[in-house]
Image (cartoon, rainbow over all chains, first blue to last red):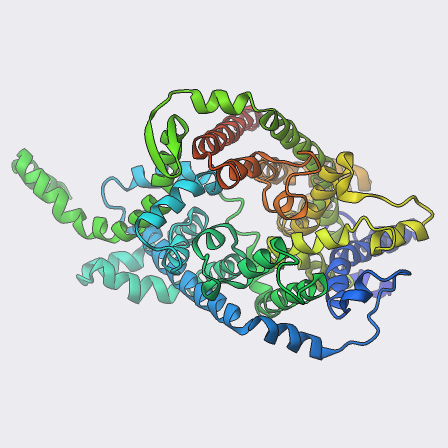
Length: 297
Length: 309
């Protein structure tokens, strides 16, 4: 076990330290503490997944038992069909795809003008973006909702898509990246009388695939989890996203016959699973990039 | 370059400059336009309108003339506001106790470990992937005060008395902060980890040459290097705790007896429960003012240290 420590030549402690028995004990303690941390992180979700297979009486049964009597996948199908849950998934998918497109396109173009085109007066707007970045957007949700009502966009996905096109964090992430691109490229484009619009598509986008991926993944998870604005905008059941539907079921618990806490837990499991899949696929981008950008400003 | 400049000077009439300004910039302005329209619609206009509304009589959605500080007076005289304000500081207190040092500590451990590094990283980050709403509902079931429910069974097995959890006024806020830390710590740990991995190893070697033990290496090499990150994440954490909303909304509804109401939840309740948009806007403005002044003061206080270097 300690053989692998031989290669440890960086960090606070190196193999030179671990040769001493006292540090071996310390290393094992570190491993144990981390195992405890991972266990604490994972157990509540595991509890959810296991418990969601219990039926209503099992959930409140005394004495308590952790595992359901049988893992019946029929329950999943039953809940799914009872609520016709596929349609909420489809709705969520529509919201997420639109949000990702808007997020990448609008924040990308604005960041491109701020970072490279720099038309006169852009500083004013960039300053405004930074200033409003500090203020939590939720505080002005009521006037925003009013504007949406005035435009007749209640029960449409348009505001939910375009909202992601005005995100200071994604904008700053893009801007930092674009500023790191070699300037010579854009000078060459200008010489060729290549328009600014064309330069965006032929130079910036092909060079920015990694950062586009990062912003797309962030938007994907954010749009999937987004609650408050979707909850206000979508009051028609046919239009609801998964999270909005789950919240409305939770807050009106008991009014729908045959729908109890056990089924709600199953829905929670169903809603979290796609996020785990997304995470599994893009794990490296997510854990690698959550550390970028956040600190820079 | 010089020649071009002289040409420009020849034609520096106001009209010509205007035309030139437009010709050089119009395509750039055009590119900015869509993004700026979205920012105006989704961020700036609601923000401005919120400030206006906080000084107005608002019936439903319609503004019916200025009333100056009426809304603010109403809010300040509401005992629930005082409660929410003091709760918010309790949230901050507990989040500093529970959620501030833990990620630094885990980051340190994670940067030193050789075995299972990927597994630990994924495991610790895992709770961050689920949506805040879903996770808050999950916790509200985990904190079931029924003596036969899972956590109380666990407490009984450990020989501890059963707990009312969220229904116990003095426990609600710490418990909510625990769930927030559970969900948020992973992302913070990764930020610390990347800061720790950026430390130049030759500094550790130099410290080792000088005979520095583990503690002095941490004290004189590690901590000074991650200090800027710590400073930044500290204020970011406080700002985000000021905005706590989903957890009390879902887990307690602000209760018991207002013990977990936060400012944002109060602003939400003013509008959606009592249809008082003016008071709702006023609370939003108060919250924003607190956050902005806190950030500015904090940045002012933490900057002089930099200059000393």
